[in-house]
Length: 354
Image (cartoon, rainbow, N blue to C red; front, top):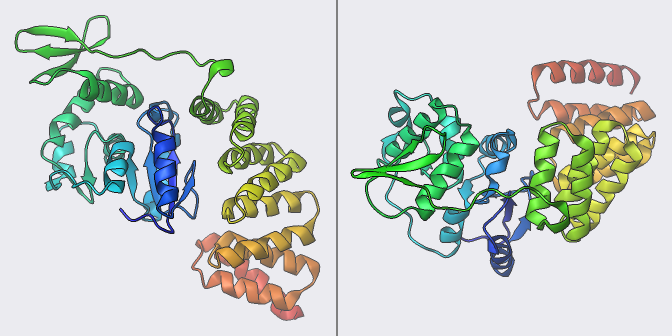
């Protein structure tokens, strides 16, 4: 895989040392690295240990956002192999719908499994070998396990179990086990350790922050994102996420500082600059907000929200000619109908005064 001039999002928790290795390899090849998916991302890579983000919905949201923008989603192993130029596995020729038949799995569930290199989803197809994995996942879900727990069981079985023909089952105590032709054995593997902030790695902190945010514990999430930002002074995602929480809480001055911190680390971070404009506008600093929106559009001319908000600010300041041109530009981007109606009304108002 050629990553020159491409932005790679390394999302979630990776195997020990793997994030650092991939980060270095991408940068040496001329690519850009971020810790989360942004509008600039060309590839989303999901860490092999990011299972804690499944049941919160955070991972599904990232996958959906990536697919909406036709951004490829790869698991840690698949991306490492592609980066090294290794040949891909057998082609996927079995229709996904057929593989999911008679199960309660959804295509979105299959995409989560693919993000951990448990199955391969190519368009609407999977490999024939993936059908058994999908059936096993469906069986575990039917026995009350969450999708996150299912992924942990399947990855442990894949990585740690002896070779041979076995079926993953649940014991009467609820533990995952391997059923062989001549008996049952336990899965081999290390248990989950409790989170300890004082001795946590950066991946631990970021994962805990994302989970706290998904669970609605915004103060804990903000604290943890701030720790992440202090621990890695090159990362722009942590201060950006911290800013998003403060913006949602109405702490606009703190949000502004967090976004400025993110932009100091990555001046081309469009989402951070757009949200900085929102914070400035909320503080009543409309001229500065407009300036940031202009910079957003310099980087991403088709950013519809930035065009609309800048039009609003220009109209509010009395620059009706500029506002009119911006509303016309916004409508050319084919926005949702309710927003388009608002823009057309504003356009008529500007035209009457221009």
